[in-house]
Length: 94
Image 1 (cartoon, helix red, strand yellow):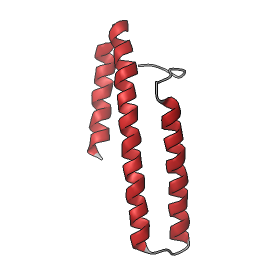
Image 2 (tube, helix red, strand yellow):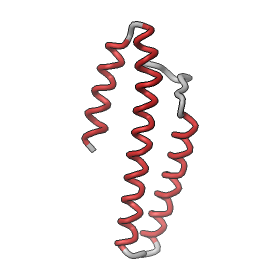
Image 3 (tube, one colour):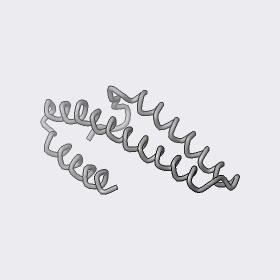
């Protein structure tokens, strides 16, 4: 499995999306602390869940494009495939 230093095609986009999600979560926390309407908070939580799912899909696409293709060329595809199957199990469970 690729170690640190391995760059994916969409690394910057993933980091940017995660930063936006982080800010959105802080905003939701502030809404709760301010006693805002539960319906408004739930709508914002749904937006964060959607954003996390979208970033997960980008990471998955990057993994297939970068890691699996590289592993196939390096002869380590079986190991990477097993790791991907485990990750799928966890990712799709939620």
